[in-house]
Amino acid sequence: MAGRLDGRVALVTGGARGIGAATATRLAADGALVALADLDESQAQDTARQIDASGERALGIGCNVAESAQVQQMVDRTLERFGRLDILVNNAGITRDNLLFKMGEDEWDAVIAVHLRGAFLCARAAQKPMVEQKYGRIISLSSVSALGNRGQVNYSAAKAGLQGLTRTLAIELGPFGITANAVAPGFIDTDMTRATAERMGLTPEQAHAGASARIPLRRVGQPSEVASVIAFLASDDASYVSGQIIYVNGGPAGLSM
Image 1 (tube, rainbow, N blue to C red):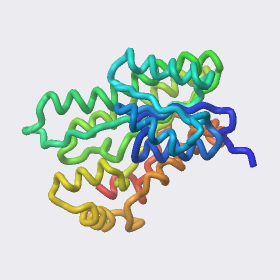
Image 2: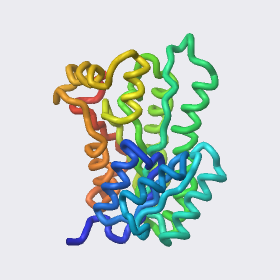
Image 3: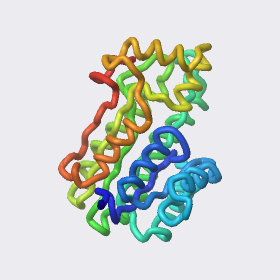
Image 4: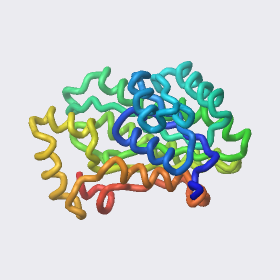
């Protein structure tokens, strides 16, 4: 049975674990050839081997998305290996949580650089082959934190900025057959949310229980549930969807915060 992404090539940043790994795995399952990038190339390669042990359909790449030269090399390696680039998933991200009065400029700069500068650099590099082939899908990971969240002034600003970036990409790139959308997850069970719980003195189970009580579906989300929405936006099923922010939150945006 043919997959809905057969013949497509996807590039997923932050692809070694969590939502990124789940997304790369889902896109590959739907038929895409997948390049997945992460700051640690060995971890990216490990995840690529888990997706396809033969190495023919998945490529692991090391990349700091905040560095322009590395981003261009990442895109070039994808093109050299697979011959085209159809789908970009801007997923790379970090957290440096702190209340405003305690937040250092380094914590602000690091989060803005990875999330916002990184998505800009990746989109700028990826749009060139997409414009040439008159086809592309750019999907960025925003967050319910874009609506505001205590202790995350840097992360919230970055994720809100990604929504503006997404809408502008949809306007500028639409005439070339390229769509741009964002997915805004709520509480998802990832290494990042588990580490956040530990910093707050909670076990992951305690954090999940507290979050679940505020979520209408009464449970936290799984990376695969975010990946399924990304896979839809990456496919031709979403050919007339562009400039949209889709909240994957177990309920209306903001209720789980």
